[in-house]
Structures are given as structure tokens and as C-alpha cells.
Image 1 (tube, protein in one colour):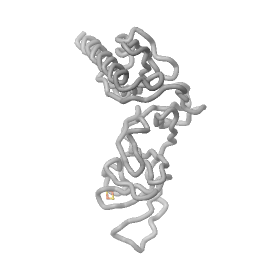
Image 2 (spheres, helix red, strand yellow):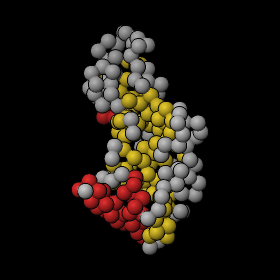
Image 3 (cartoon, rainbow, N blue to C red):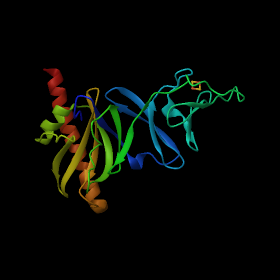
Image 4 (cartoon, rainbow, N blue to C red):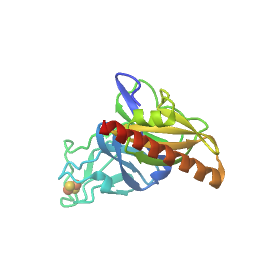
Length: 216
Ligand code: FES
């Protein structure tokens, strides 16, 4: 959620959804990005567009500490510099071939990407255990209305489930909202299922409210 005028942190994914040696797409208010985690576990975020011919880098593959484009195999380091062009193995890629990168942090097993230059670190989310993420075709206002509560400054709405209060970390994306479901401790399999269903139920209510709003 926007927290100041210089920039803000966006919770783009859960750590569990990005194992070492993999890449995935993610969305921010500014558009698509590529997230990837190197073999040693370092996480990176970059523009989701290869400088060569525009292939999505989130479709690429991770080799060691570099991300390679799936089209012609150009590879990039964590700072976005091109390391290798397979068709020209003897060529040192010029400095000008570079992918835009973003600051990225992990707190509370959530991956945050900085839009602009935030004045502080992302929220710590102490004591909260990530369960799953789901996308709602509804904006933040519709989700708040469905929950009967306003989001906190950190972007969290709390709702009651049969297993207790659960926290929903919201990330707005072009009229949709990515919802990260966070639990207050390990609830076990039955508790996790209950919390997951409560989140899905809230999503349905929010999407219903959003449709009514659009139909007005
Ligand atoms: S489009 Fe990425 S290497 Fe060619």
C-alpha cells in the first residue's frame, strides 16, 4: 500500500512460491516484473522484458546466480547487467545492455518490491504465517466493504474465520487485488482449510460488490 510520497513497498508474492533456482511473473502498480531466486537463494526483481527482443524474462530460467532469457539465452546478473550472449560467445556484452531492476526484500516470508524509493523498510509482519495468495477481481474499497473493516497502513485487513482472526495483506493491481492470506501462528491442516475458505468467501463478496458498483 502506498505509504509516502517518495515510494512504497508492494507485497508481490509469498517466499514459498519462489524456490531457489526459479523465476516467476509478478505484478505491481507499475506493471509486470520478473522475480527470480538464484541457486544460492538470493532474490531479484527486474523489468519483465528482455532488452534483446522483448521476451518476458519471467519465462526464463535460472542458472546459478544468473537469469537467462528463454528466447536466445542472453543472461543477466542481479543488477541487470548482461553477462553472456550465446550467439557471440567471445563478446563481452556492452554495459549499455541492461535490464531495469527494483529493490526487493523478504520479511515475514513475504516478498516485497519497492516502487520508487520508500523512506523505510517493508512491514515486518511478526507472528504472521503466510498461507496462500489469491487474486480478487475487486478493488481495495470493495474488499474493505466486504470485510467491514478498513485496511491498516501496512495494507492488512482482518476478518473473522471459524478458526480465529486471519489477516489479509492486500496489494492493488490495476483494479484487481492480490490477497496474501496470513495466519496468527500455525493452525494445523483443518485451521488452514478454514482460513482459506474464509478468504475465498470474502473474495466472492468483494467481487459481488465490485460488480454492483460497475453496473451502477
Ligand atoms: S529476446 Fe531475450 S535473448 Fe532474445
